[in-house]
Structure formats: C-alpha cells, structure tokens
Image 1 (cartoon, rainbow, N blue to C red):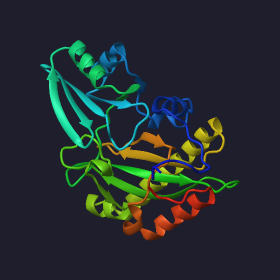
Image 2: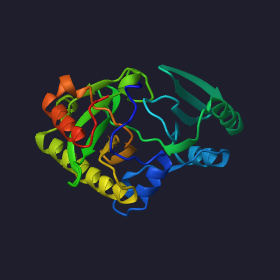
Image 3: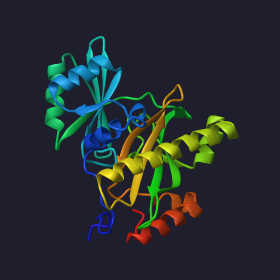
Length: 261
C-alpha cells in the first residue's frame, strides 16, 4: 500500500492554475496571488518579458519535482530545473529553443508563474507552510506553521530537495525580527489563510485540510505561492514542535487521517 495514498474524508481541488484562478476571483485575495497562466509558447514569452524570473511548474505535482526557473539574460534565457533530487542549468539564445527544451522535459500539464524574490534567512530563500484544518461540521482553524528553508543554491524550498525546517520562532530569531513584527506577520498569514480556506471550500464541498505556502518578498510583501489540499504533510513537526504536531494530528484523525506523511 502506498503510504502517501489519500484514503480519508477530505476532498481536494486538483490543479494549481484552477486554485490560483479561484483565489484571484476573490477581490480580497487577488493581491496575494502571483500572476499564473497556462504553459504555452505565447504565455512563456509574455511572462519572461514581463517578470525578471518565472517558474514553470507541473499543474499537479509535489516535492519540487519538475519545477523550472527561467530568467531572461542579455544572451537569451537561463533555465534551471529539478529532476528527482537533482538540479541542472542550461542557457538558450531564443524563446523557441527554451520552449522546445521545456516541452521535452514535460511529463504533464504545466503552468507559468510570476517569480517572487523570496526573503532569505542565512542567505537562503524560505517560504512558510500554514496548515489549515477543520473538524467535520466545524469552522476552519489555522493549526500551525512550519518554515521551509531552501537547500544551498536550490530553486525550490522543499524538505525533499534538501531543505531545512524551522519553527516561526526560530525564523524570527534568525531574521532579527522583533516580537511585534513576528506577531504582525503571523496575524496577516492567519487572516489570509482562513480567507483562502473559506473561498476554496465554497468551490468544493467536503474539504477539511489545506497546506498553504506563503512567502514574503525582499520588501516584506506577503504572497501565496501554492495551496495543497491533497494530503499536505506535517510530519517534520513531530520532533520540532510536538504540541503543534499533535494538534494537527487530532484534527486530522477527526476526518479519518492517521498519517502525517
């Protein structure tokens, strides 16, 4: 039996582009969602012309696998991509050559997303996973957070790709944030996370959990990078923050989930 197979009562919304479209349709969420479009040649050219970096991602995927970062350079385009746990880089002179290379790599439907210049800790980019859950018949609650710090020179922050996991408290200490700054950031993420949960669950009944990946850019602006409603993992917290972990597990068990992986 696949230990990651989802066999419990919590429905999900499939597809990153669909999720982004649902969030951008909400006037209160639109400002937090990076521009995201379907992958095709015209959209790839439009996005690389408009933004300093873009990410090409599987519309359905996890663990950072198959993610590409594209940057426009004076000589053309730089492509970095993740295959399995390996990352490699190449350069292309034309959008046509770049597009054809990505097409050869493609194993499923792709999206193109505006790249965000992530804030850094110890010189490494990070994002913050908010776990939002509800017991059957109850309201949504933000049950905890974990910070995903990218591995050295990696274009993704996933734990699977060699990243590290921090608590919010450790992040605040390492970043030199005051207690007030840390509380304000957490309050903002919680408010947006609950709005996202309410908005998406109105589109799809039977949802009980979401892992929402937030990021702050270098200017301190909050962004929503991704929402995972298909078996978001929280097992790294068992050793790092056991009180938070067991709260998430209590909620999970209420809708039939017994594994944090």
